[in-house]
Length: 372
Image (cartoon, rainbow, N blue to C red; front, side, top):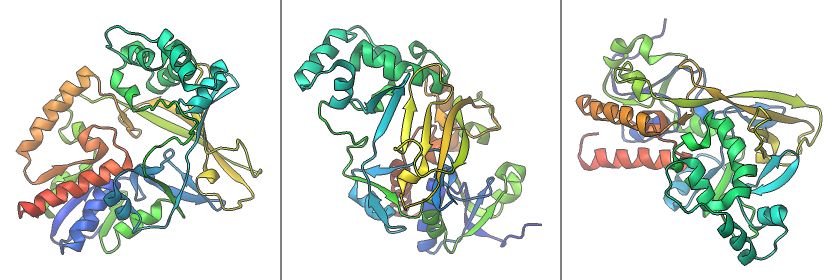
């Protein structure tokens, strides 16, 4: 039997970034919080686990990056970070290319050495018509060669949809550079916590009552009665019992192996961009935080349909899903004792720094309105 205190100021559903930042900031302000999470660990998808002295990213690679000094200063108070240059490599049928698209990529594709030469090739291949889908967006950005080798197969595996049936917004995150810079992120601050991410959540939740392995929906009425206000970070359609329909997500699964070698692929991330390879990428975790480990741990990442049992990862923000989400979002106004946030609560694919900024902004708003 799980024992609880009689009353809390806040019930926080979810021990990921949004919920943990909220719990930390509210506790600093003298509020009594209870955090519940259906998983048996804290940190959500940022959870890292020590395997063979390697901090394994259990739910895919997480590299912290931001241009916001306030957010960088905030996260680095909970762990020591090392600055990194994150480089991603693409494998297309054993041809190797640099990502994101840069002069190395263009040299590997076409043998060009000058930015103007690369621009001319792309310009000659560009799609110039009306953009209505991801395929047209990609062709308008980088032309036919890059699209067919480095975008099409990877993207269709990831989403299990043809690119012509995906919204153009998905690909707009991918940078195109006419320099020889191979760093994936151009942000001012890019780093990885020495010792993994889990320690950050342990410090965020220090002094906070946390109950793990507890599904909020198994005893919603009882848990709601424990607190005056609630922070909800789970899937928003689940909260409303799918009354307007189910929102679509893509999910992921990993096949993780411990290998008796010091170096498997020589890089933290290699994407497999052909359509025949069943996985989208291989992670070699030691390169996120190298520490002279004698073994290595690799994870093969497989896209998977979201079946409402496995974990939702990527919102499918097409027109139909956006319409459904808007109905749920409008319904949140009737639940004034709840705050909805995070990736799932907002149905937006946020990076880590964006979730922190969202939580801090909301706390500031509550303070300014004197309703904390």
